[in-house]
Image (cartoon, rainbow, N blue to C red):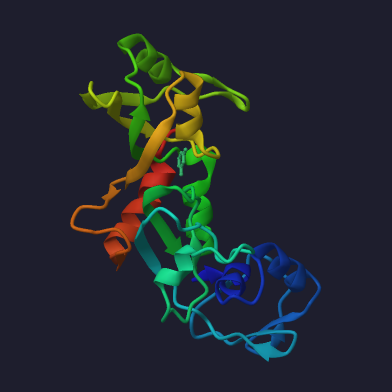
Length: 242
Ligand code: URA
């Protein structure tokens, strides 16, 4: 059983909010009867009509993409750049990315047509850990790493405490490989955190999102999440502290 507005949104007819408006306006019928109650639950057997047109229900799908750099995490780009959807040429469903990864960041990104799932994972109150591997220009000192661990001041406020670990350093090239775990999802957050301590990032990759990782995958690979993984991700989101 799913809420009517969710089923309409998932089918790609319109957004969930607009679907709620249509329901309230009496434009939606379930099995031939007008329904104006927002909480109405429907099953896959129910026939739903919006403005007299039967809604073809989309099965929810969930994918993991190992995004290469040079790809935008949006469904279209006015500058004609490659988007994450270019990795799904055969996909009949209207999928979209869960959150964002910068154009110049590689790594794990989820795509789905399940708006509720995407919103849950992206909600700041659920704090899902994301693990990044950064290559920095210059080698941060222990004190500077501690600043990142405690939280640094960015133009949109202090960052929450982060797990930060230097994995290796290259003294000759003056670079470091640093693992960073954050649960916030602010725009270009990891890059801005390192800029704040004076070490610009040369390369950035998201290795892990919750318990999901990129093991066994190459850049540009996609794989479908198993139903168990989807369930675990949902459970992870709702059990995180707020
Ligand atoms: N932090 C960044 O700076 N960039 C990303 O793409 C993700 C997190």
